[in-house]
Image (cartoon, rainbow, N blue to C red; front, top):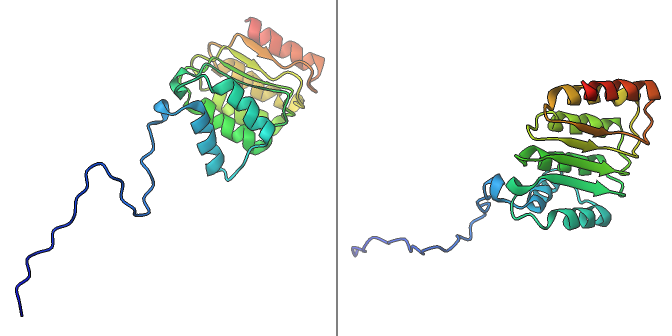
Length: 177
């Protein structure tokens, strides 16, 4: 029996291994907003429609990382509940978000519930525009919560929805105080 020298592992510098390892994800603040939205869609096992993807690309492509993101704006496309969940994830990780504008997106009360849960925690949020959706009186308590908890919120647009005028007056009075 011959003595064999010990086998030394081959080390390669800066080369990824071919094992089934997940690539190390960038810190969220360094990812682009589109990367965050795409990752959220992947987690939800959801592929947004071409219209949604196109609108997001046109409004988010200018940001190098999510820390720069000030506004999430999508208008004129139907957002599914999974689209809204992915957008909520984007809003959640954007530290300096000032405006969320989802105009004419067929949002319903369930979408408002998801949005309020995230938006009410944002320190710099000044504007929420949910004009021309399918939001009803059922969302008014949630919107009141948003007004009370988002301390910088000065503008909440909910016109052309299914909210009764007396309820709109309540929201307006809360914003004015």
